[in-house]
Image (cartoon, rainbow, N blue to C red; front, top):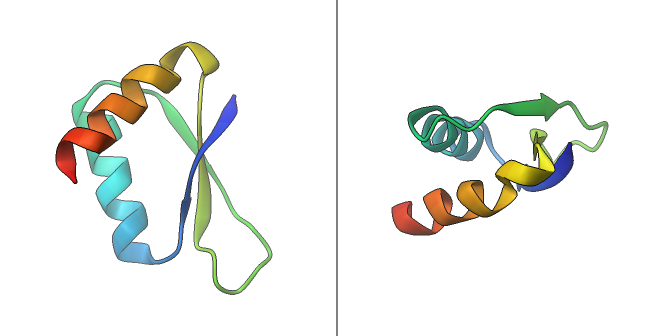
Length: 59
């Protein structure tokens, strides 16, 4: 798994998770100790290009 995205709010985390789910990309959210970061989203290295493509299309 490789780091894909640092969500800075619950809404941002939910948005990115929804995009990945709709695109069929498996992911994992890690909880970080820092107060300002909700979670770090990781994806499999081979899924990284697809995840980036999906996220760019939704912005």
